[in-house]
Length: 444
Image (cartoon, rainbow, N blue to C red; front, side):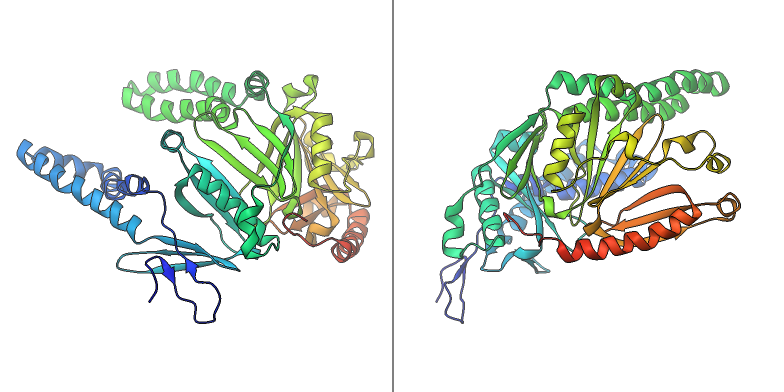
């Protein structure tokens, strides 16, 4: 006989102990029936309005009296029948009341583990554990765990993935972290004001909404057009400020640690070995201050931002940590497209540039909003040459470099002979780079 929550192992190894999520989880899952009704109302607002007009007060109270207990029972049962366990080689998650589902997550396929705390979760002292796993489009998650338990489980999973023995993995604890950079809230606020995205949406609204009112004289039409515009302006300014508030970057043996968020706190880890592409983005109004934004493409992960704003020198030092052995090429190292390219892309052709070093393929584009993409040769999966009829007439071609994060970096408007030579030389650099590259391991 085995105790409840313990799976018997016939191989003689220690039994696998199953655990439940935090008892506050049913409150989160009880919203599912309500969400279904809300989705139906949004999908068919006319039908929902007709049904509501037919309801009497008594019928409405009876409906609520049935809905609320049913939602509470659903939340409790979904929590009761959800278990997870950590074995020597995998994380198992069992869910389902009528239809049982067991997920087996191999530890060596875990690429990143993040701890997030929405506002209400912070109040309740719980956290959500999100796992980036190779071969899945979305993150697997355990929601919710106690805040301390979530961090301890994260440390244990990383330790086991790094090769620590199961009996000692839970004692390793979270790897120590050294703070590299913290973005002051004032600097973040100024950078968002200088990006211009919010101002563009406000300008569009200021021009378009009076014009709509003049043409239609319909308040609902103006509101239908204005709300999305104002929402886009808010999302590109206030929304980003709330999400990127108190952005802190630290370095630890298991990768780069990122903590951020004003209302919802997130604790993320970027394993440098899985980074495929790094982008340095310079909006026009940031250049006088020497600021850049650092974005990432990470294989098997949805993490896409490393630094929301930082001085260029600091950003380049962080890039050297993410891509060991890579230095950002100076501006004079980039070769511009030939003058004949102006007939293919008028004016903007001057914003393109290419630099290839022993370690990295670097492509630059943009005049107003510059973007410099860096791809280590070892991360290149394929190289392609593309040349349309108009480009062929003017003797230029594009060279596309594909990475393991399903991303592509393009060297645009290169001379045709140079593009053909680059196609073969880059393929050889990629083969050599992959052969000499170190394995991607946690805590390596």
